Length: 282
Image (cartoon, rainbow, N blue to C red; front, side, top):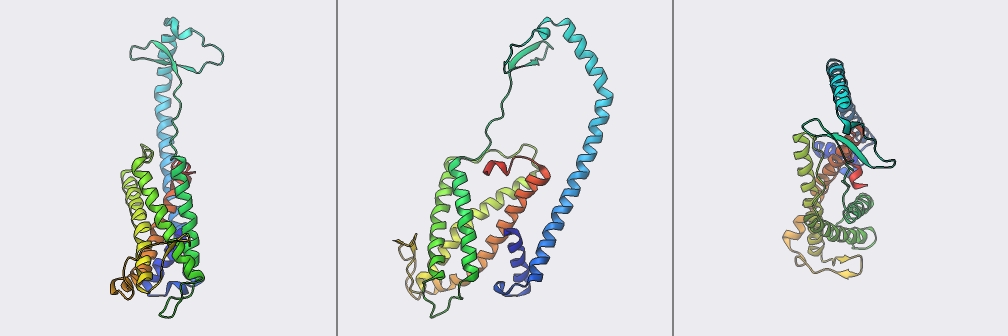
């Protein structure tokens, strides 16, 4: 859904249409574009898998017989290879460089998930962003006589909450690095992932600060969780704070685009690459 809304907002921004007045046609066009992109990626992946399977079959046919014969001969000459393992043992037999069979503990896959705290931060921010954009989409337009009550007040409070959690999440990330990406991930995808994550962190912090400054310039107070008042960033009537209103709206559209890229990337890993990238955050 974030990808669909992000694509729709891009179409609206490029065509000069008010994002609040998006038509069903533009949203449908964004849905079709995203579905077509995923379809093309899936076909490319399937074609690559078929070629790879054919090459593996050819290699197996040409070398499998010879390798099996050598392995059988070696096991017959190696008494250690015929030693039985105890029932229930987790030992697996491997060979060293000299060809002698050795019994070693079976390697267990390390836990490659994010920490529980990181996952909690992630999904809390996701829930708050969904609520924030839903409120921003439905609340009245802010003008000179607008009062910071109702949906506008909720928008300010949730924005401050997102700022605090985003800062806490960034601090946690610096102290607890993310698990390594899959070793076979293409370089271009790895760079795109890092840039997208950096952009998300930057905008999740900058966007609430812009809204905070704009609210102060209008003479409004901003509070955390609706109870803890926050200091003023700019005085009432400050030109800088007022100019942040338009910048805030444009930056929100950019954030939606990045969220859309993030969602599409997660789906690409889960449905096409079929690795554990998405599971690491679940």
